[in-house]
Image (cartoon, rainbow over all chains, first blue to last red):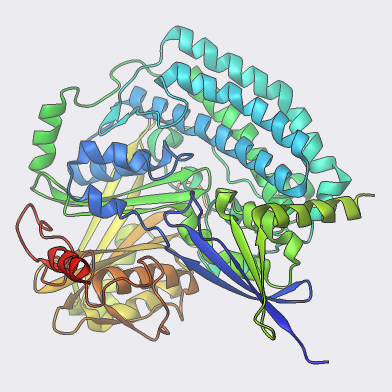
Length: 407
Length: 187
């Protein structure tokens, strides 16, 4: 019998990337033999738009690059402009920035845990974890007025101070997560079915992660101790002891599989709680922003000739912005790079040799927003007959596999 | 592992490439209450030695590659490659940015994907956005722009091949969008 392969395209709508994404798979039986990535169906040209605006306007554009990382992009962008213009951020401003960034990490990681559970067919876990996520979103609303797109970053500092009542609200949130963390860890790391579905699945070796320049939890789960918060003393992280978390802390070994990525993200939840607590304990007093008057700030930026780079560890990994100012109202160059841009290619070694039913969880494991799987076509090459698998069908396949292997 | 200081890295590059290094700068930034600092190195190198410089960087440590940014300066395009060294150790990371300029008459650069495979996405982006030929990278359909995007029009260029009439500080530079809209209307 001749060997017959099927071609399976997945995509293209995918909101967490700068561009939506299509995957083309060559399938033999149940196994993936070839992976082809085709992003770019809806490039928004945000950098181009930014280059027609002034730096303060860009902050709000940067905030909207990603709905989840709406603190990370302005953080990196403001750092880039501050480096170019030589602006010093007041210490209190630096601490508030870190508190917001870490609260964002908590909500992003819990959101991811819920999505991962959903992909495996544990919908009650999805509801329970997203219920827990509400608490941190409420806290962000208390601090900034918004659940996402906080609008709190400004070149030279932050726009809103944290009051004593808000500090006690954050402490209450920390205590809440300390209480529920035990449950979350128990569900994800001790459940035999989740272990069966995620161990030895979607492996990314340390060498591949290094060569493909992976970032964030994806790189750390493969054993690379890379974390901008640890590597570069920026903002309040310069005072804190942040250590890159690799899965061997918990399991004693590094496999680089989906399970390890779950371990890293869950341990980072605890780490974020510790960071916020340290920040609250040592919160310096004083100003929160270097220049309060916007007109004065814009005039100052208009006279700057220079370039700057800003790196920040977003929930998904290193987020980097670069700015070149040429004594004009608008920047000459603004380049933004989201972490998934670098993690894109790691999908290829992860997916090769896996089963169709594992596609959802492996793709979800690097933490893109998983709304991408809107339509899947299975094409029978010999007859030209098309079978379209919707996201629902694909999800059903994944759920069936979980039921099949549940001990 | 031995860690070199930023000055030592710059000296190493200057010793190896001599006059090819057009410019070098080290920026230091102090942050936090304890004022710990981190360094950023900016190197500008002639295009002939660019690939060798990336190869040489690999002898220090396998560098982490972040992205490429570009700037159309009229008669040339300036590309900056962002790397970092000594990642994975507390406060040791050094950002190293290598800039090189390509003349508009000869818009080509050799690929670095044979040294760093992770650079592929970024190289594809400069092909599409600036119309630079990357030697050694196989052809592929557009990754970022639509598959049927106009040929010979490059969004980040500020000359007659750019897309938007108001590309540079409000100056009228090209009329590609207008032309294309008229074409669409006719058809």
